[in-house]
Amino acid sequence: MGTILSLKNVTKRYTGKGGSVTEVLGGIDLDVEEGEFIAILGFSGAGKTTLISAIAGLVEPDAGEILLHGKAVNGPGRDRGLVFQSYSLLPWLTVEQNVALAVDAVHKDRSKQERAALVRQKVELVGLGHALDRKPAQLSGGMRQRVAVARALAMEPEILLLDEPLSALDALTRAKLQDEIDRIREEEKRTIILVTNDVDEALLLADRIAVLTPAPSARIGQLFRVDLPRPRDREAVNDSVAFQALRTEIVNYLGSLAGDKAAMGSDFGTLPNITPLDLAPPPKAYQDAAKAGATRRYMEFWKLNKIYPTPKGPLTVVEDFNLMMDKGEFVSLIGHSGCGKSTVLTMAAGLNAISKGAIILDNREIDVAGPDKAVVFQSPSLMPWLTARQNVALGVERVYPHATRAERREIVDYYLDRVGLADARDKMAAEMSNGMRQRVGIARAFALSPRLLLLDEPFGMLDSLTRWDLQDVLVEVWNRTKVTAIMVTHDVDEAILLADRVVMMTNGPNATIGQVLKIDLPRPRDRKALLRHPDFYAYRQEVLRFLAKYDHGPTEKAA
Image 1 (cartoon, helix red, strand yellow):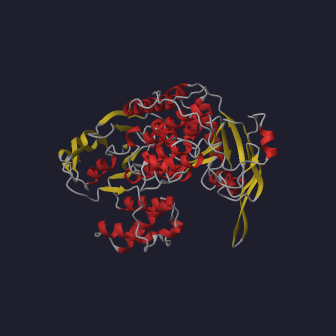
Image 2 (cartoon, rainbow, N blue to C red; image 1 turned 60 degrees about the vertical axis):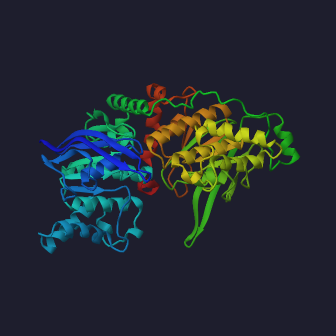
Image 3 (cartoon, rainbow, N blue to C red; image 1 turned 60 degrees about the horizontal axis):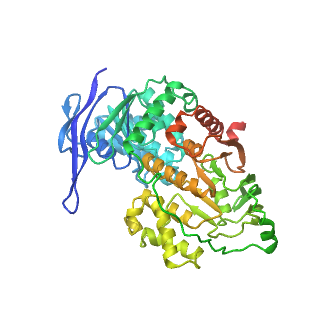
């Protein structure tokens, strides 16, 4: 085994519309051994895709060189197979035909029968032998990505290049495809370079992890060797002291690259002393009952059911969901895709009719949506033609109509400052990154002074750095408001970092609560301190074990 790929001082610059020059890659040096699995880990905008495109021959470096077997890479070639983040399949062709396109293009020297056999072999390798005749519209996102992997493998490349191929997939599908990629690594013995922003993904799959420094002028800041025995089971490695130590080292290094959060611990002044208007006051009997200021059983889900009509008859998505919450409690709701997490959340928001049972909040039954229940969705849901300040002000003006204009502006600015947007208050939502838009969404939710904060995977579309940053923002603002909160997530670390209890849901249909885990970790919580806490990995293992139990669905488990 020798060096198959060498990158020497690879540099790439782009010129903007105004003539400004941005150096994306600032001198990348890396040697990759034959048969090695390298994970390139970095944040959004760090140049990961530019780097993988340069290796693929799709982008020409401005300086430095890329050598394959000691010879300079000059454009794309069949020796490098590339799988993009998006599937890039032709929708009018079947799985077999999509893969055959690549085979026919690069294996012209082979007979028709040999090419057809190669197509079938690679499609079967990724577990889609049963779906040869299906078109992309008939496939799930995970299945489409398997087709893209099969197509790349069918070229029989020396190096398989994977550009965040799993980032758009749900946690369960992602885990299954990670297992698939590891099996392909073992069976095909190919050199693989994976671009990712997921630390656990890199640790499960790679021999070495190359961490890129943030933009601009990205370089490889540090290389980590992953000396964990294979095969690596995500549940088993969680108990490994070596895994925990390496994971902590990488997370801390990424945190040091991100730098200290300027907003944390800053003086933001004080909010005006104004009580929000109750736009839906309860009956007098409810008000009398609430005068005692009870904090126990502040929210109750009682025998909650959600049933949808279908052509085949009623479908029970959520069944007999029962939960009590105290005032100021933070609950994380976790489970596989399709388990009804978001359905429970939208019923709690009053956005989705309750089929059976009830949800009681602060001595009143939830039946309609309102500003007393603030929701932050996965998609930021802002008015793109309004500024950050105007988007937050929409809700503030509704719940503080009795306040002066200056007081309302103080409330808006306080929360925008709190989420780190002091310098972007007057920026249009359309001009913001996803991370900035989500900050506006969080500021808008807290500015309503709601009785209940509902978060539906608000960081699911973001890269690791932005996700960690906004988790810190959420923790910091929640520490000051102590609003009762429920957060739907598929991120185990996120669930533990934020919650007082993690509520785990069984698979749908007929999903319900399978287990409730109390998180007895000190607050306020800090990510670095949490990773060092002796109980953290025990909590993590408990959630991982539950998710593993349901990773094939209740029917298969019961069989």
